[in-house]
Image (cartoon, rainbow, N blue to C red):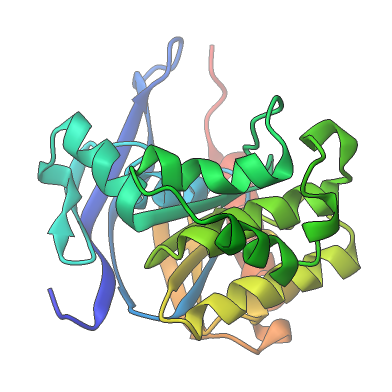
Length: 258
């Protein structure tokens, strides 16, 4: 694995047993290979059910593939034992998800400080406040998640990543529950992380958000359909439209289940 590669996926496959299906399983990923360079911003797009979230969860070590290999930051995480994998995630990875994943009983400040504590590195008070200030939410540091708006909760989730400064960040639909203005701000913050040497991998349905990435990976039916440069909103929208059309046509061609 090159020192310039943060993520390397090799022939990744993932299957799930589905009760009641004639073939007994559904194939979410089909021998996907992908290389993501360090300090880059990659967006993964595709129609619902194409496997993009499964790809993200496997790449982040939150789920294990049925077959294939995953290298993150020079470590083969598919060879790690569960405890080793958990420790690797705690020390090297950051996560931003649509549902925020904040602890409801903790304040915004304590939510931001929590990953450091779990990794055995208590963050200085000022570092936590600096992260909250960077996303303009420091004035609400003492509030709990239920006292914050959706946009404010996502800012706390971003601050949590910024405070720990992990070399690799995974984001699953980080703008899915936000308005246009808040979405643009979140993408700007994710984009800014790459300037600090962080690698960002994001799954999204939002074409404008995807266009902000350096590279856009378009998925279809568990495979990578194509990879294009970011910044080309119309091209990305067209590719996404075509992948949805192909998915719908394939579904119509399936024989009826008894």
